[in-house]
Image (cartoon, rainbow, N blue to C red):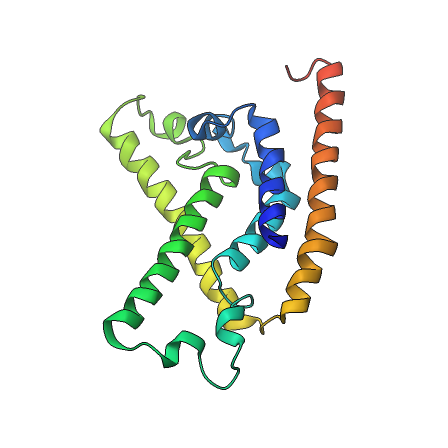
Length: 193
């Protein structure tokens, strides 16, 4: 729960900026390159680290690290059962990457594609460009997930708990306070509604 709580709190800044829980509204609030990663970099980092922990990817693959000399469930399953475990792991990574793309990277929004290419709303070409844009963003995050697995050593349980409770949770709460303060000042000045 230490990292899941921080993951939920990291979302609050995005929801405050978008003013909605609807995914299409969140994407629409990030149109024309105003992605939430630029306004919520702390929230993005917290959500990304919590996604690594949630998907049991290295450096947070603690269930597999328990026996140290063998690979956890790797020793008990082989063949198709083992393949299904790995398929489920990668499905979780794709899902996390898609959620990160939607919340922080503008989703299917291709900045300035309509203006540069002169494409109309609702056209098939625009739909294909948006699908390609979303897939490219998810693919970049998948590459990052795999790259981190190759790079960082494992955390111990106590290190993950310390990271979750002593670092990520307070930083997520400060991020919410800062977002609320900045939005309040911008509303007072009449810059946003």
